[in-house]
Length: 304
Image (spheres, rainbow, N blue to C red):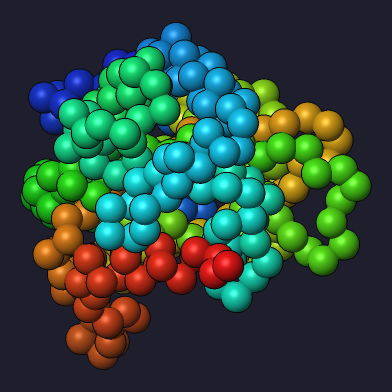
């Protein structure tokens, strides 16, 4: 599936003409598929590469060592997920991946006993800052695209629920015959997501015809997609598209990095009246972010 690629190299937040042009491009891409490819969004390729290298070192640790940093639950949303400990598809089989989740990185920098290494902490913190800054600017563009004031979405994102995640999809040859996925079919829970990949694909997107389409790996760029909160705010105009990751069965491991820009706990998200016609009704009921996010995360955990 070919996604619209947007280059932010010459985008300047204070240039009204460029803001208008970029908001139109983002609007068209998100209305079409809920996904786009962003180049030059402010991430240093060397930093992303270093986080990949550090995450590989983390996942290469012995299982007992990794479990010292075991995921602590949906409230903190922080720590290590072992293979088959999570099922992103509602009611689906456990995912064939391992991950390390870091909610509110800046609030956990000084915590002892939660970071596998100082290097991993420092690199993750730097990338988190870059992702958060880029996400704020992109949310401003989305607000303008949807006819709102520039800060309409960004003001609801202080970073308390922003989350960085590194993932590893190991080889599971032969392929499971029970339909297990690397990551089961799901939509993302928050506002927008950035996904960084190297040269190994596996991501699939469900198109409007309900057909799974391969999404090629894109290096030195971020795949950006709409999450559930932005879908609700836009009353479905920007779809939170379901996606999944195929299991690795050809001896080629897959690593990825995801950044989730989620609203603050006490925010109540509901469709903007702009997108509800006089003879129409809202497609979505209001949701409080805290309950929504914590519920989704809790539901994805595989009970032993």
